[in-house]
Length: 156
Image (cartoon, rainbow, N blue to C red; front, side):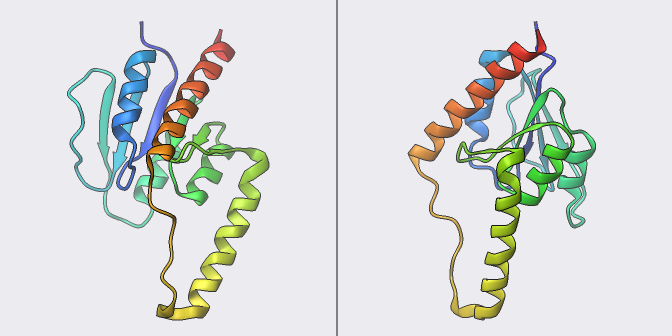
């Protein structure tokens, strides 16, 4: 039996799609892969691929409009995470860090500060997140599994 819980994935740059499939198959949870361009996905009844246009924020807007409750959104996009939390979904970053009502305000503020710093420094500043690691992948697997178990218990 398939769970009513769904996972929506902001997929264009998501490094943990294979991990999502693995956990979703184990929990019998549907996954929707949302992207601006066609991506290869497993041919499986639990996996749906949605290709949106290439308009600015098209994937984000689609995800917000279809925010899964109960469900999980997987994204590294802080502003999308904020919108999905407001829609009632649980949100996980690909490194396994959950976005929560308590943490999102600080994350949005830090994003704005970093954008201002990058704009002021011009092209002299090369930055971005640290490289994705095996530890991040492992933390994500554990966090996704924990979120699905929590949501399944709450749905009973």
